[in-house]
Image 1 (cartoon, rainbow, N blue to C red):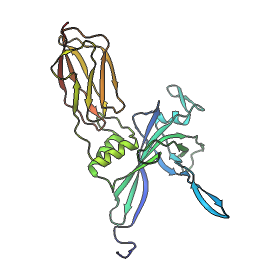
Image 2: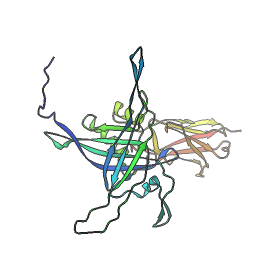
Image 3: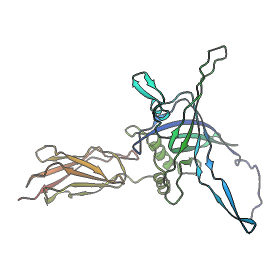
Image 4: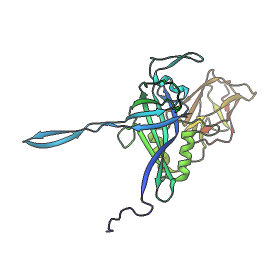
Length: 319
């Protein structure tokens, strides 16, 4: 066994700074597209709970039970995105006119802190922090006269967070990704999800999705796994639905169904809980003996990968 050695070159680490703040408004249990949080100055992490309660028997300590730990803290900023207004109880009556003391809505947010060491300094790495199901309190604001030493008004909001489920672990409200310990290609894919790309809105993924992404590496190339009815199928029922299954979760699509004459078929689209199976239910029965075309276009998965448009055909039964 090797002898312990302290303060070796390259083994001195520290964490500093905050940047790349993103706010994800939460509505109806779904996180909306992220918006950049300019003017974010600090995030103070102040978990609560994890208090040990001892129990005694036979005049001695029998056992100890630790209470649940909760994630909370303080957000400091010079300003905040407009969508954060609802999170701190503000509402717009009209453009430029707002009131306070309204319902506080929940949100998620992300921010980056820098990891430094004695060799690479600030270039060593960083941590991406994700916080879920947060609700903020109000901030005291001191408006003071400008003098010969002007200073910005800094706002401070206390927040608490509600945990989300995590497979094979206890629920949590705070997740951290360390750039120095994960695969760089997978990290780039994760940041595309978190910060968005051209054509892909930034979003806040849940812990299970993140764990799967980093466990399996870069996502598989997007593909249409199956389509029902199958391509060139015949004798399909007039009441049939069209079901498309993709290998990855889909973010957006523009699938259309038309008759062989080019007439658009009206119908309803629904996704399964995985976001991989799309069902198209025609509003009216299909026409006997008619042929139909399914144009699978505009399909983009949650990783920003686009599917090359494909065209499938089927024919309805003759009665």
